[in-house]
Image 1 (cartoon, rainbow, N blue to C red):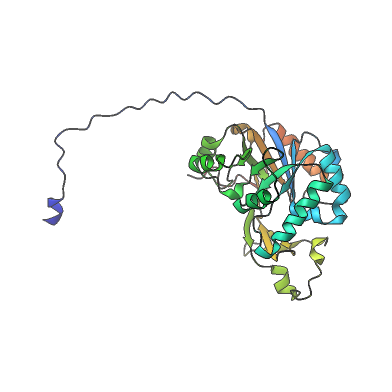
Image 2 (image 1 turned 180 degrees about the vertical axis):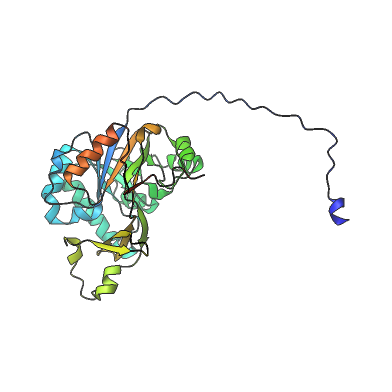
Length: 297
């Protein structure tokens, strides 16, 4: 009886509604190519690379004198951007400030990749403005929809990187001018406020930062035998764990003005090949590659 009292009677059949959309196809953009070097190699000759418009380099390398010549070579040939860390401990802010000042005084820096909104506050305190530098919003700002994109546009970011966790239809909706899409990457699956190596090696109290220049590579192996690359940041006791598979998608399917390539373990020859494939609008195929959530419904 109670249910019947709340039933609503339809007195008139609803008329069918037809909605017509007159969306015009988006114009094809001239794509630029960005290259993120997650790990910088002193013995690599990065000047051999071509067809690159921007190079992103993690902030930690700008405070290490061993990489000075490599950074000079890169910043002389390419538009170079400082790739800001996602996590910055409060007691590390002064080190970050010093490192940024050193970088802009010693190298040709075109701009910054903003990985956390707090990065903007640090740059503001250094009087680094949009008039002098490009600010690129990283995918870690979680650009999941047009509302996020519009909110970030109020920060005057020159470019916004779309989240790689999205499905194809959502990415297509977000594509356009000043949008960057990651088309090749072994993506981080976790950034933890904890040093896995320090825990296993018991080197917290006497850390000599040996893993920074260590040629050894560290992995977590899951129950299926897949290896997940582990990279520690011994300055902040932070660990980044990377996916065992490489995300690779075809740029030609998406009308973004910039395609981004993230490099981790690849050689110079492999990087050149990846750039050529991306430049052609294609993707890399094979058992080591995945299209991530592209076909997720």
